[in-house]
Image (tube, rainbow, N blue to C red; front, side, top):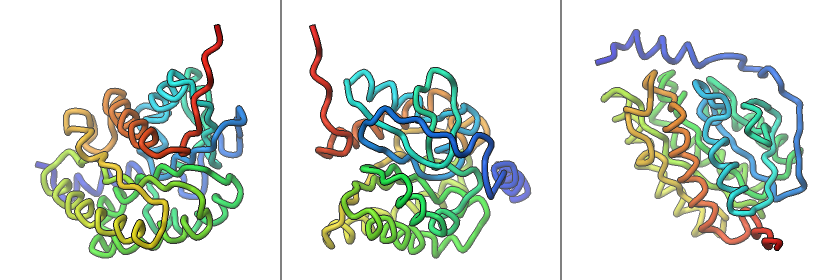
Length: 239
């Protein structure tokens, strides 16, 4: 079982470049429906650069959807045709919240894929208040981009018992938060990413391997398909 020192070491390892990432500022666009992958190192793809965005892009392309990943950050392999995103390794909910309004106004996403809160747990940052911070972040997203669909993920597991118990407590608060937003007329959707990934998919106990990221991609894709308009309409096959 991991000790507290080990947990802190993992947390320290993911806190990198709080004010920016290499390659930031690039932009790729095919004129498609804009999707903002939003979060921390799991969105960035630590351990497998590009992360779930690789598998999600492949599924969108295979489904003949035309989409544009958007954000101020840029990374991933050449096989990922669109490298833009808003994933910030080491960032907590409050740090995303401090920047979200500007990002949304700049990139104007039609859909937002939000997976955030893991670093609140790893850094033991007022964990009891994390669901409230997430609720406020969602409110800021929906106020700034009221026509966007916001897909809110229950966090993937942590690879040790005590850490994952804290993640589960956080995740258990999310259905009520999302339900309240929906009842208020907001375009917010709950996505269960916790069940998608197992501890066996987490080599360092925090970040998925390629298999784990692809499992996340499949869940995101199904969630997007379930909401009309969130990724537009597939192109008509020619020939």
